[in-house]
Amino acid sequence: MDDRDRLGATFDQAAELYQNARPEYPEELFDRLVEDCGLQPGDRVLEVGAGPGKATLPLARRGLQITALEPGVALAAHARNNVVGYPVSVVRTRFEDWDGPAGEYAVVVAATAWHWVDPQRRYQLAARALRPGGHLAWWSAQHVFPPDGDPFFDDIQEIYDAIGQGLPDDAPRPAPGELPNHSTEIEASGLFEVVTVEHFDWTVDYDAETYLDLLRTFSGHIAMPDESRERLFTEVRQRLASRPSGQVRRGWGAVLHIARKRRTPR
Image: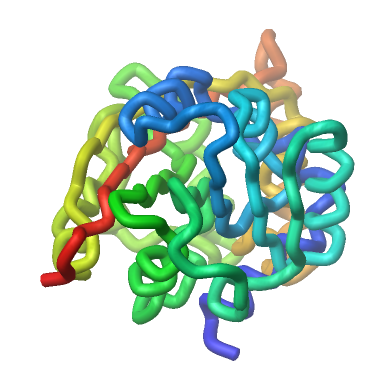
């Protein structure tokens, strides 16, 4: 098992927290997805790495029929509970291992999951699942740093450094609207042509315990040695307790990539 698979497998440990701790995606993102993919109620959607259904439910509410792939036992169970009453089938498998029908889906969707799929196979797998003219749509919720953002994230880096979990000096700190555009990668697959690339940015305020719950859902923090994680969490509690608001404001960003399956692969 390589590092990507090992870290990806940690998420099921945080299934209880994931639904409430991870941010909701903007409704405008789903509206844009439906519009640019030309989706109609009843269209079939294949979702990759559904987790507990953070994107599944908003899509189901728009009348789409969804096959949601999720390898984690606990996460798949949460997803099933969260979409009761909607035309959603949750299948406990990885995209790489899925043997479902080819050429039948209007769109393949991945919400903060595409980077966990084998990069050598993911575009081929998506193209296989899609009907002619179908679309691939994916995005990831990531930390962004507004120019006037909360200084907490700069200050807490000294603790990450002290426990041997610090970021390299050249680690990116994207501002809103500056997350990477992966159009070149999509086009290089030869299987898709880019239709839309759009940035969405928002903020969420956390108190100490809700912020720690968020950290508990990140693969790097789940895999962190217990002693290091406890020291970090103690510092977070103490630093936020010293603030009048008791809160930290985190910037979030996502880049919605939508691409159409080529009629003839390049």
